[in-house]
Length: 274
Image 1 (cartoon, rainbow, N blue to C red):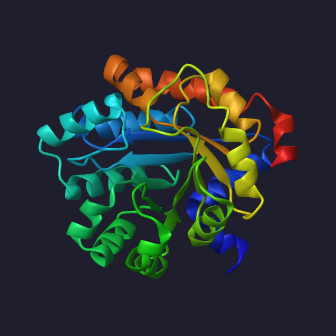
Image 2: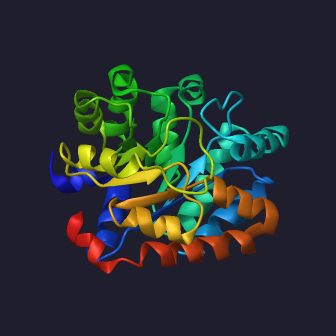
């Protein structure tokens, strides 16, 4: 597999940012929050604020890995009647708005229920770039890997501080796009300071893969984004952007995205360590 193929759309966008001497910014918002149209507008505002890659959350009934902020938002989306087809429609609108790669962050059950190959085909058909699957491990992902490869989609799996070196090696080998390094143990959510476990995890991951490594869980402001960009290829922000949308609408999302975008640009020398 060539480096270009392994990078996929999301990885290429991250590497482009790295080649500019900065970290990339990956931003998450769930579809359908606070409404269908409000969700689309929020994602567009995130793009306008400078994110390099978009994550769109597919609301799920049992979001066990999500913190309170994201759980509340996905509950609102589901209560508003959001369905998987509405998530695909959201992707289509966002993909038509910008060439920023659009990934879906989803628990595996909704994809399996929809039909794995059918979902991959429909998702690719509306301009989606790939999936982040937090509760799917590579050794149980044969059907998804086959469908993703068939439809030219990125496959982003997660590593964590508890992952053994062998698991990191196996997980990164299955990835296309980038590797998602969860900086903390536990559920998602903004935190006062980034985990001290993040940098060692990134170093261990980079030792076994040439793919970009993004760090998520806990980043909430420009200073934290700058700190992560000093050792990782991308800073991934979710709960803080959801809170910005909840409190300040699209304008709030854009303002935070702009601040975070400034943060990942603060350390031009950091690219040398990537």
